[in-house]
Length: 545
Image 1 (cartoon, one colour):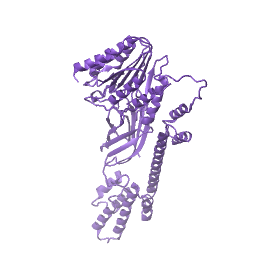
Image 2 (cartoon, one colour):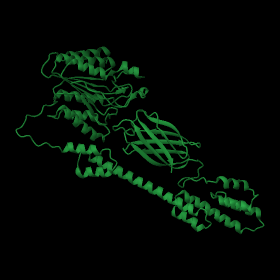
Image 3 (cartoon, one colour):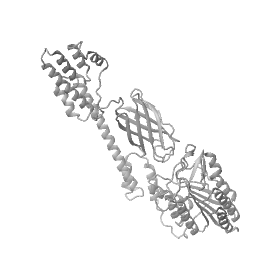
Image 4 (tube, one colour):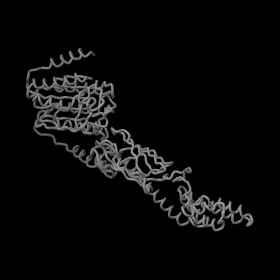
């Protein structure tokens, strides 16, 4: 559609709007932007179409526009404010927008379809600032305005990912205005896998529910969206309304009011009080009270997850205790010359490093027995057999025994060195292939959030933490770890032979994408702060088990 033709259509739409003030006129401007060159969206045009239809059915004179350029967007908002002013003080205005939006340095910007954003300066000259919209509505002087932004989707402009925050920033609504976000400030909303986004679909149903004050409509929307998204998306409003407004008027009063059912409010309050718990008993308690409740499905899944996590933690604890017991037994028998005692370690702890050490010792005892049986005049052969029997030993007394018999032997210099500094066989931590990396084995890794958003963002919520015991093989580890709030981080860790750690982590949903930090192991551990994580801050620690 040519630019001139689009301006003609816009002009005809706005000129057709009545300019005479009548009692409680309702005017709405509905915009859906989805045909972006960068980060196109499927649902905004359909969301705007649905909202225009529902608002028309609720008595609004609707101006419905799609895929606006910057100049069209600015002009549509200015003209809408003028129409509200002309309609009179009793007019109710509603602005609805679906599409891309970003925040930068605390300001929110709605994105036209022709925007080409390279840095924050482009935001100032190529987008509609929400503050401009609010000033236009405030200047109209009408009694009540509703502003709905289903626009907290992902930021498609990676070039401003550092200056742009996650989601939209919190804005206080001016007097006589209710401002509604599809999700909490600083969080990201879902575009939805169906025909409409979860938020717009719920709002359309709420508007058509007769007898609900506008605040109750948005409360109902919040509950429905939380249910649909598993609490990943929590709609939010800022209101300075002082009067009542109903999309659909309440039914005439009856002589005797029916009893009020407060059970749903009680259920929501109960759920809110336990939603972040890590105790499965809390969710089992909810299910016993509300077996068919709104959050029954989520509660059942939480019970399963938390039970599995506790079981896994108990297994890890048992395995650590078993390895500690194996270490004690090995310490007691490692210097023994009795093969039967050494064999007990292999029989009781077959899949541990101590079983491997016991195997080496048994072979040494066997070879030394063969040496003892060799003829005395075959001295060089006896020395070779003796050395072969102990060369992989970790016990300094074996090398002392060699030096006692062969003080000037072929391997005397090596033996004396091993008496002084010891010899560690190159075996894997849990019975794998041989390895020479000094940092292979079991490590405990802990990730603890110390600053960030206090809402539902994973790995960025106050009190969120996670601990996992990992196996480092050939100086590397790849895997994932979960937090106590069910957040998942995907980890790629590399340790060089000098103890330098390169830590890569990817947290789904973070605007910073993958973080990569360097640390240094000292004394079998390190503790440091994760850097370049946007608005999240966390402590990271690793300790050898």
